[in-house]
Image (tube, rainbow, N blue to C red):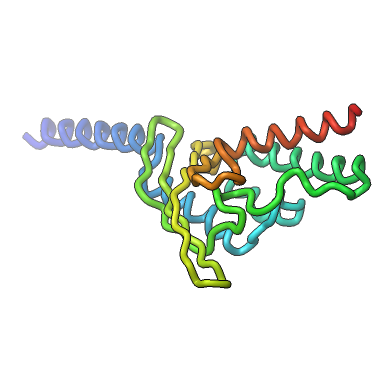
Length: 189
């Protein structure tokens, strides 16, 4: 009599294991949110202005997708080439904070809900900055895009949602590509 129960138990166990494996393949919202938190923790620690230099990029590299890491590296090289071509007489191609919508950057963050679709996720991020001159507080939201590679979530792009006239618009990858292209144009002249 125990044999049918054992077979049923084995089948149930196998079905649960398969289902858990399928659900785990795309990761959980908590995993995606944790990855976004790791990125912003490094961001607040490093606080880069403009395109991060190679030393700063090393701190970001473990939490970035290879595609985004390559674009950052290319943009840093482009900035160096641009500075050389203009003999340092022109400002850098990217001034201010590269990773948020606000020139001054953020002082704190809170990662909100993340929407997961297969091997990608997008998370809302609440950011704020307090102006030291008048103590006024600026609050805004950006988005962080993640991809799942080698069974872990990595930051793949950022979307700038701030409404300031003279700050980044659109997506980080597009901005980095623009920096690389602008530096090529200067070298070509």
